[in-house]
Image (cartoon, rainbow, N blue to C red; front, side, top):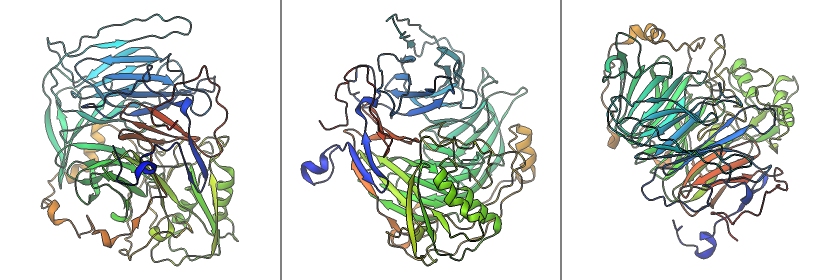
Length: 612
């Protein structure tokens, strides 16, 4: 897509960019694509998606990469910034007939060097559970018995020293009794080895258990809970079968969902333009937000679970406070639809200055302390000053990114003047710290999650959205800090925001996935919620959708054209950033100080998305 004006310079594909941390560089030898490196003709195809998993093998190179291009699905060893990609030897490759992969997700809890569980959603509505290491197809969901031949699976085994190939045809069936619409998002439930959630373009979500069957007849549902623009049903049958739950959310397609870092809350964005945030276990609606116009296409959580960022057809990124249930900022930098948003948990600005007043409980104070990247020793030492009696304040700026159909990558900082609009800025010096790859793994100190996602996720697992953290212990308390983490950087114009609300959240969070648990928790609330239906045309100027002049407007730190076709992937890893475009090129951008000399098996051809 061409950008607006600016001549040759603006339309040039960028291969590097600079932020306050330093220089990010595209690594051509680390590009992944189809083995022939030919750009994919993306007309009418589903978006390219990328999923990561770490197998914790003894070789020290346990990262694995899965991506879909058209009707093809690839599974590679991911060598990142260390070694050049070898596209001639995919661990697994599958070609589907009659349907296309649309999304996928690894189960990080069960992944080993010998086996990994990968869920794949399809354009025709099916969900497949495969093991790309064993090259097995375990189960099909939403795919009942029928005599028709729907699609074929081919896979190639590329061995180390020989080019032998095997192909096998899998006959599966066409009668999809649960949902016939395209799968838009599929994810394992955090902390579970068997439960997964699937969203469809019909606007429905379904909770499955891999141990249960889907049955040979259409499911019958019984209402569990209903509220404004959503309803949740259980599957009514004599024996337990899939789906365990059916969620109907909003109007139109449910485009994406994301679990909070502690797995307790679920954020959903729909084509009707609404963000809806649910308590996943109690099936309660926590809060909503409306886009400025058009549908919302993507969503992600901040590493501590205090903020949600969305993007969509209004070309904006919108920051929503989980604590206050309101929009606190919008960002304008894209010239077309925003397709992916993601927080960068590895980059932070640590600010030290004179003591300033902090309003909040001691428990909130400790929440602020633990947000810091425990994985980086220098940052950890600064954040730990919150514990010392003579400490100066330490605060963190949130970094997030977005990519869109305008082929541009934008990076954003959420800073003190946005998070603390009524608090005077301190006289401070600001330090920048980029996380070290040699730091100890996240979570190695055993810290548990205490606020709706107040844990920083580990470097892997990785996915399109923020990686899942381990679910908090059954006895861990759930508390929400009234306020936010701040930084001394004050670049953006601010406007007066509404007074903060104090919210008290429930007691101990226990992950109990039995249906009886959900029923018992909410048995006194099964009566229908009688609320008037929200009219999108009347939301502008309300807390659901403030006017542009009523909230701060962020400007991107950088906004660079990095591809020829629309961008569909943005993943922040410890030593690099991964992006992908609809042509099927998965690009690695080395972080400052992380790029060394790559050992290459041979001179790679000039990749797409670079300037020679």
